[in-house]
Structures are given as C-alpha cells and as structure tokens.
Length: 168
Image (tube, rainbow, N blue to C red; front, side, top):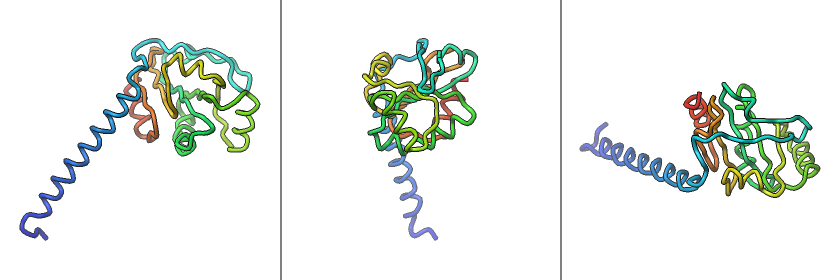
C-alpha cells in the first residue's frame, strides 16, 4: 500500500533519525567515560562484603565485569537484573559506591534480595582510582586483565554480553 511513495520516504527518514539517536547516545557515553583509562591493567584487590578475598588478577584468562552501583541510584536498581543475569555465567564483582558502611550495604542487599559479590566503597576511593564519577558504571575486563570497555548508565544485557565477547 504505497501511497505515492510516502512509506519509503518515512522509513528512510525514521532510519536516519534512529541512526542519529544511536550516534548521539554513543557520543554521550564516550564523553561520560572519557577519563576512565582503557587498555591498562585493572588493579583491584580487597575483601568482599562476605569476607572473601578478591583480586581481579584471578580472572586472568577470562573476561569479566567490575560493576559500580549505589543504593540511592534508581537506574542501578533498574539495571540490577542485567548484572544478576550476567553473573550466572560470567565473572562479576560489584562495587557499592558511597552507599554507607559494610553494615548498611549488607542490610540494603538483604532487603533487596541482591546477592552478588560486592566490595564496599564507602568513600568512593575505588571509584576515584578508576575515574568513575557516576553510577551505574561497568568496566569490561578482557582476558589479559586490562580494561577494554567502559559503559555508564543503563545498559542492556545484550550490550554487555557483546562487550564481553569482544574482550574474550
């Protein structure tokens, strides 16, 4: 039902608008994460909330995600299902950034039913080390232990899986 060529013109216009929107979103993400170092070793070691010692160098040979979140962040809460799903078959360490002390983070996680491994970054020191200035943020660590990709804001599971695949 081609009414004097209107449908092909509409689809062409809509495709152009979609392409422009994607380019703008990628540009905003690149700007938001511009200070985060890439292709450098991801140095992170410490104790998780459950008392386990963690060192990202243990991931050598496999890719993984370091995911920064906060209890006060609604986007982090909306994105939690993506990270939880990824953690079923990928290496994930989460960082509770400026969300209170260990007891406060533990209480929040119990209340929310959030059970992923987490390191508490009460003062934002870990975030500053990685130049993370907002949440949610995900660092994709490649199989060599380097930061290969960075994303900030809501991210789809497919997008993170694609980045992990590229890092493998």
